[in-house]
Length: 391
View (cartoon, rainbow, N blue to C red):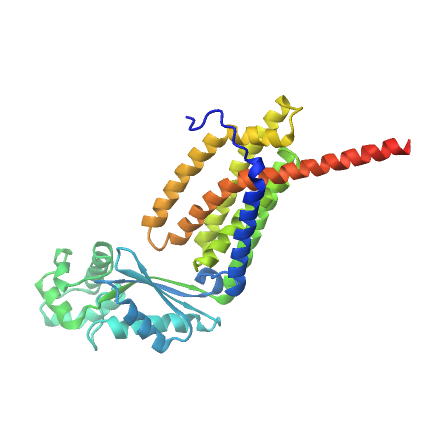
């Protein structure tokens, strides 16, 4: 399938316009990073506690933030997840000793502000072991006589039903009527002895500051290793100047994308690093396609200027670039618009990177190769002239 046939666009002739655009994008991104003191790292890289909490109704974001701020110093981030009545509560940690205390404080604040009735355990947060232990005497009082193993099995079945069928949140104790072994006596006991909170903690993630710093360093090294490996591969497959052009183009893509993250004040997390590494592979693949066509055309049109060969090669691969990049862009755009907050950063990096990567393959990598070729040819002519002069 071809969208364009026999096009003759002068891509190389417009290189200075697009190189100027790249310089402008890089400058704006660097200025933004300088003003904000670097990228806005997520908890993965700077260390902190992150608690995923699901509510029965729409999460009271302002109340959560206000309640947390009274007990926890520093920045409190409360992020609502689309369509799930779920929020992510995050806070930065400056000391390894704070890890357990901050986690416990978040749980205590949630229980005091949004838990069940005072003095009664919360059925939406109690574990199976604690539930079995707490039911021992009350069940007998309501005429339900169970042995220790039977009571533990009943408690495990109740907790499993709560977590799997109601995502950890019961709005009414009678919802447990379908659980094997739950009769009127059990329902009455649960109503008397337990309360029902408005929230359920789904997951807790804690990363220490030192671990975050190590992850940050490793992420940078992984990206540099990927670029180095590509430089060696492309230099081996083509010439060293092709490898330099591809690596500079990919580095340009990564830096511009990070700049966009700073401009739009988005967090850089591990999923974003995964997206950036995906972008590195995607961009260099598009660049290699163009380089491969340049190499093929050089065998046919040895007498033509190298700039004309670049234009011919880019025009010949234009349909492939537009179709591949266009379809991938639409898929990533849909993920960005409808994928929810958790995938927002990942999708944003890919949306920006696909556009920038396709553009850099044409207007960054190819001109660098042309410039390198021109430099090598100039040196060759200079060296040849010097040899003739010495004779």
